Length: 63
Image (cartoon, rainbow, N blue to C red; front, side, top):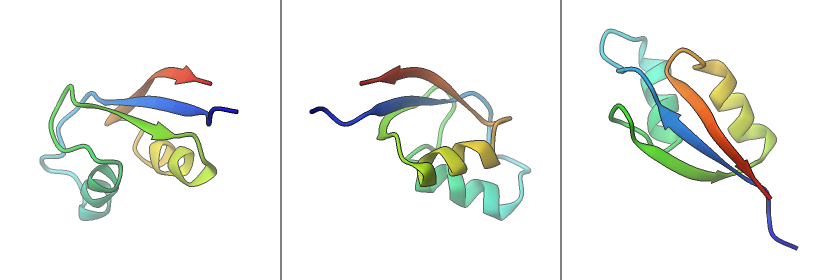
């Protein structure tokens, strides 16, 4: 059985944002606008995305 994944895209800059939000982006593997990452769909990843909804969006859910 294939694991569920989500595709996360950075939609805004981390400039002038609190350090914790910057670190969350880096933790997701993002650091520049329009970068995308395919990540495992786990509660911890979903929580990280939920902390910065103004910076990232979920493009696609696979699996």
